[in-house]
Image (tube, rainbow, N blue to C red; front, side, top):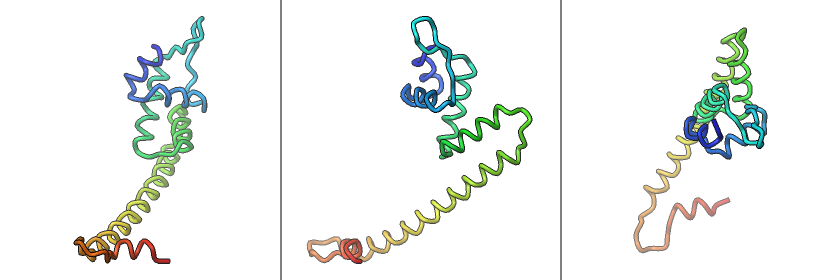
Length: 128
């Protein structure tokens, strides 16, 4: 398969596929004219990486998860540890977003939204 075929099948842009190659996630073969030739194993890794990135795992987490996936003697505890760490980070982001939403919601409610220039939203944004 060429990079276009792989891109269509795994849902990742060719640029991302090239990046994953540059950082060592995949190592496609090269044919006589230098074009990449992807085997099913690279396609599977790229799909794996696409799903992991869609869940928000960092590149380093993806590197660790990919290594664990390739290691048939892995301990699932290692996978769970990485996933739990990521889940904790997501929970923190959710809490931060909920706090941000509550603050902005209060400011929007306090704003008359009329023709007067007084606006509590701008007042809050400009305060020290």
